[in-house]
Length: 427
Ligand SMILES: NC(=O)c1ccc[n+]([C@@H]2O[C@H](COP(=O)([O-])OP(=O)(O)OC[C@H]3O[C@@H](n4cnc5c(N)ncnc54)[C@H](O)[C@@H]3O)[C@@H](O)[C@H]2O)c1
Ligand SMILES: N[C@H](CO)Cc1c[nH]c[nH+]1
Ligand SMILES: [Zn+2]
Image 1 (cartoon, rainbow, N blue to C red):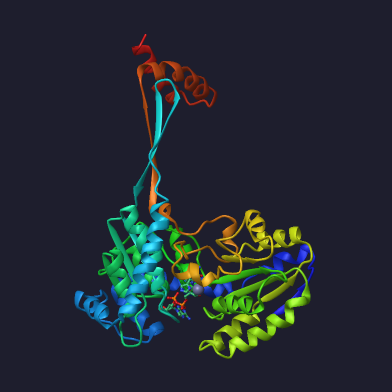
Image 2 (cartoon, rainbow, N blue to C red):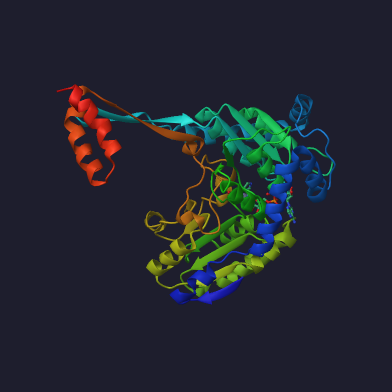
């Protein structure tokens, strides 16, 4: 991790850049995949699965027998852990339900807003380098709570042509309606356009690598809704001398192990802890099975030393991390001043890994600075809010003249007439 001491504000944009594939290459290869699936449906999916996942798949849909076999193969302790995590996620997301809000803006003019589930949703579950079954809970639980009728799941098959057993178990647990063996940009294309096997959905959710994230952004151009760009994982740890060097190292490595293009950032108030943290990183790195991946990710990562806390916060808000861990003496006050982050972890005993799995918050979060404008997945992401209004005779008599005046000023006589015609009837 390269160290930067009190970097000038004009360098912050550069320091906030995440490692990315060459944009033209990414764009053209993903467009190519989308076009192939749009044109050839299931045949293209099979060819692309052979090309990228190195496995030949005939039947794309996961059968009931495969689901039953997966459930049988898992240890009881893991099934229990998944069930506990699902219960916490359900508790947190159920609390996000909103009542219908009704307001009488003027006597006789009543307006209300009601949340309605999106009928058909697609959830993408990453499985390229690790089978992220926790993501099934993060997306399947709120989809079920919202009342989505169809929840289609796509995840890449492994070399034996199967989807990981824990992904299948979690999918059954949360009530996913259909599961398909398809990964990468081709899975996003399948859910966006529909194929012979995979139904077209109205909104696509889920994290993934740069190909998956690009595909989601491109299908938006074709009218599909997506949750947000949730690409390679990242964490920013803000710490001072009250933090524990071994905790900081562990938290940085926990996200560095996701992928070579993950980025982890450390913001310190001075350089007194740097060598202790570096030593801990090397010590812990040696024990990681995914050491090679984490090492590459650390090479893309940075230590930023900023002496003044307000300036450090400005930098963090500019960086807009997916995850922010605050390990400083006034952590609660710092957290209250955060304006751009996907999810925040406060104090020495709130590792980000807890939110990845089981605290209850959602781990599908905006990366690459998108936390400046996007929020992570929530119950609302699976709903749309429809507004309603109803006017009485008294209501239109009061509000009608206001609208007539405005419509005339906008030179829209048809609008004015829609009101006038009624007011005349009421004279
Ligand atoms: N932001 C979030 O909320 C969040 C949450 C969980 C995971 N993640 C991220 O999700 C990502 C998962 O990535 P992954 O790769 O392990 O799994 P993945 O399922 O996202 O992608 C695997 C698929 O990518 C495709 N692919 C691989 N190489 C390709 C190439 N050269 N060209 C075209 N397509 C190719 C293949 O089809 C493969 O099936 C990680 O970066 C992780 O950090 C993010
Ligand atoms: N850290 C990931 C979100 O960026 C989520 C995850 C799933 N499993 C482990 N981690
Ligand atoms: Zn993680």
